[in-house]
Each structure stands twice: as C-alpha cells, then as structure tokens.
Image 1: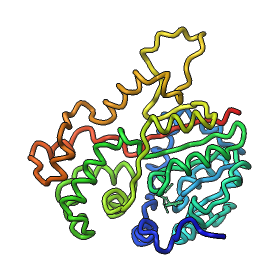
Image 2: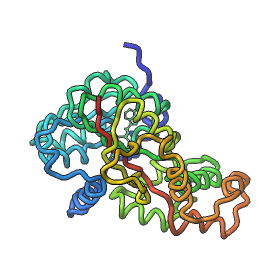
Image 3: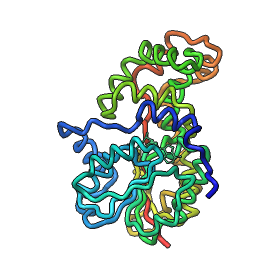
Image 4: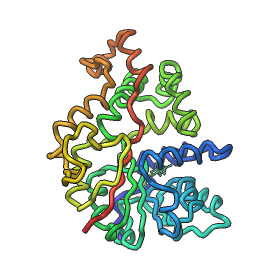
Length: 319
Ligand SMILES: C[S@@+](CC[C@H](N)C(=O)[O-])C[C@H]1O[C@@H](n2cnc3c(N)ncnc32)[C@H](O)[C@@H]1O
C-alpha cells in the first residue's frame, strides 16, 4: 500500500514522539469530573454508553477511551499513529479488551468505522494536512444512527489562542528553545490555567500549542456544511448552537443547527463573541507580525477571555 503520510518524517508526528501531547493526569478524580461536566454540557447521559461499541480516532494514550470503557462501552478501538502512545494505552487497558490500529488517519481504512455505534475524534483533525477531506471521509463512513463526538480548534473560538501562538512563534523566531522561553515568560498565567484545566504537563501544553508545526483550524461554517452534506443531525455542541432567542413555536419544525445558511445571522453574532469576547482586537495580528506590540496589546492575549481550546460538536448520522 502507498502511504499518504510518512509518519517517520512528518514533523508533527516526530514532535509528538518527543513530547507526548495526550498524556493526562487521571488520578485524584479530577479527570472523571471534567469528563462528567463535558458530557453534561453535551447532553450525553452516562447510561447511553453502556453496551455501545466505540472507536477513538487519534485517541493518543487512551485515557479517554478507557473512561468510555468504564461507562460500559464495548469493542473499544484506538486508532493512533504514535506507537509510544499505543503502547501506553495497551498498559492502561491491560485488564480490559482493547483493539489498536497503529496508523495515521490518512492511511486508515475508513470503512472500518461503519461497525461502530460511537466514533470519537478529539483534538486531532486540525493537526492533519487536509482536515476537511478526512472529516468528510469519517462522516461518509459512519453507520446509520451512529454518533460522532468531535472536538476541534474552531477558527473563531481559537482566534485568541491563534494570536498567542503567533506571538510565541514570532517573538521566539520560530526557534524551539526561544519559543519555550517566550511562552513561559509572557503567558505564564494562561499556562497555569491550561495545566490545571487540561490535566496535561506544562511542557505538553507548550509543545502542543506553540511549538507544534501544524494547526489547521476549521471554521463553524465549514464544519456545519460538512456535517450537513453528510446527513448528520445535530445532537449538541459546546459552545451551544441552540438559539435561545428563537421565536419559533416549540411544536414547529426548526432548522437543524448544522444548517449554517438558515442560522447565518445568529451564527455570525456567535462567531464575533467567540472570537473576541468583547475585546478590541483590531490591528493586533499585524502588530504581532511586525513585532511592535504594546503593553496593552499583550494584556489582551494574557488575561480575561482567551477563547475556547476545543469546540465540541455531537451529531448523529441520519440517513
Ligand atoms: C492533542 S492529541 C489528542 C489525543 C486524544 N484524542 C485526546 O483527546 O487526548 C493529538 C493526537 O492526534 C494524533 N495524530 C496526529 N496526527 C495524526 C494523524 N495523521 N492521524 C491520526 N492521529 C494523528 C497524535 O498522535 C495525538 O495522539
């Protein structure tokens, strides 16, 4: 078979072998509590997982898949190109059945996912060279009524993180050691929160967010269009896409949330909020690129609302 991706040479995967992006601190109950809050926000009751087969695409070291298995998921399958992560997951699952497929999504036989009730893909797609094309393939191959749990860096919700990343890379001259120094010196507060909330080490956060050579975000419009074109019906998302200002009677049919066109006016307002949270960001990107940032500019990427790391979208295949 001709490989689409040389994963011994791909810079991103080389970096992930050096500093693992997915290793999570799962002791002490915080990981379970974070997952429980996420599932609540996404209207996913714990009991819905019982007896359901699941495949996790780019599932890293397997902590999230292991959690699904603790909720009663069966036939747990991990697709992951980094063999170091796969081996870690195998140790985690030593007393529980786990199937592993050690390959990048570009080379993965997508029709495999037809067999699964739940497909999850968290924090992976935006690291691919062609995120849209892989997302379309995943959705195309979902079985009828299968649920897709998807987390991605959405361009608007990620915009302030994008500015942070641009800042670290520009002022760090794209040099690995210098980028680390810049991140630690100027974004210390953000890093502390990211470590506390994300349960990853500071090193993992710095490498995955700033040193990482590839973050190809997708915007809400593209995500909705792809989901709609593949007959996905909206179950939930975080941030939510449900319009609380809608005046349509509850008994009347409403446009599906993945129908971007029908929701365009409302979504464009949402995007403005996600992007800046009320901050005036005019000209900031240019000033970062030109290295003439003011103290006030810097504050905007250091404190207050700093965007969402991952945006979640849950859909059900309805054809
Ligand atoms: C930020 S980590 C997220 C891991 C896990 N999904 C989680 O939420 O903890 C990104 C993952 O994407 C994987 N990845 C990177 N490129 C990939 C590719 N081409 N195909 C599949 N997975 C890939 C990495 O190896 C890594 O495990």
